[in-house]
Image (cartoon, rainbow, N blue to C red; front, side, top):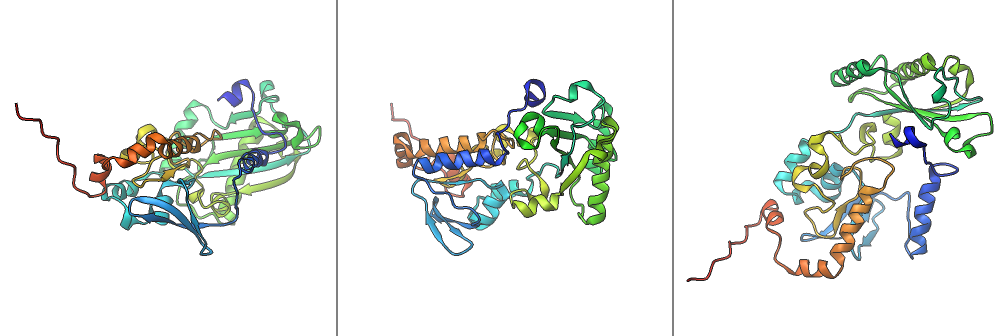
Length: 326
């Protein structure tokens, strides 16, 4: 909403510049960044995370904590293992609800978009495709597992927001929309969805197709292939409906970065406040990890196990303190 109302802040030169800046900050502090290496297991010593194992068989010890920037089901089911989880958490994961998959189109245009609405020309983001009543139809189609015939789009004009993205007088643009779960994204389904998206854009920017000199399609299957966290093409780490937001995210009993295991934190969009280019999920996890490794954390670790964790993990609750006799 802020991007549409007050301007669209983006990294100069492309979104990769944001990742590069974060990596530079880590390295400046003496850290190391390793990419292209899949983690397939979190090592636990009792109730404490002590490191991870990579798919190549390398074991990496965690000095302070393991922050998992992966979706909650992958962390708990794949990296930790169901056999180590409290029964309540397993049941809640069975009811974990994903957000709708995303279908994204990216275009290189040899001219600005020919909008009929004057205000759209200078906007970094534009919302289009349906009116208020149309949202009802889109929601109904998604709930039925059908492709919305008139999709709702969020479109970004990246050269408008950052002139370094493409040569002067051209435009680099993308648009995404939500699609139902369970579709097979074969060539025919992809082509149908491309037509639906571009038809929606052509209705409000006549002649749009004549400006296209390049197109890159990212179906839900493509998104998952590029990033295993985007399971089924979802980008929000789970629905942000009220029943799975705030202290209900990712599940009611574990609605915070902490997990049932010491030194293991959920740092992905599956944690509050969900997806977005804000970094808040990782920020919350990092603050929790730093607090636990500090002086107050040492005192807390020395105390008996918290009753809630003990009960959820199957241990016997501590007896209630007895009052002294009068």
